[in-house]
Image 1: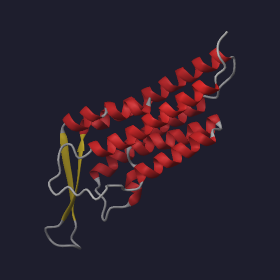
Image 2: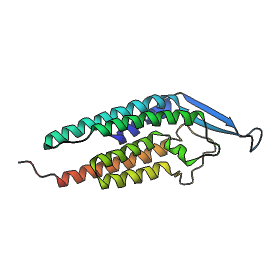
Image 3: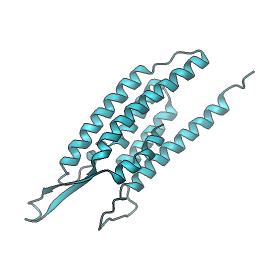
Image 4: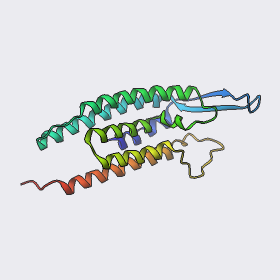
Length: 191
């Protein structure tokens, strides 16, 4: 679900109205500035998409639990997920309007990818899944640690966001496929 939400964000990031916010950096020089570019459409898309993803995951979890005849604790996950979506959106808006001086690593937590990772940590706790905990921690490490493979954008493109979305969405997609395959092999055949 989160992989689909991540890939669906591409047109909102690419074609949304672009805004550039800059702050002066007087310690470097009189004309020095640090700027942050963002899409207004992404600020609308991400909270709605994340909340809908959490609700869809909850509905699917309840469906599986009923099908198997077991209970599930999905409400804490949904509540925390919606709170995370709201907090990450507020932090993203604040970070976009307050470019870092100098860039701080915690700014990477102010984004939807980190919100997805935090939500996966909560799901790992709710499901008591060590495997999901490892995947969530690995995913968070990848999206929070600045990985750029040496890419330097001297003339930023409107597609500069794409590698990060493809990497994070790809990781989520591979993890989802892995869980689906593991579930398929552990499920007893139907009579």
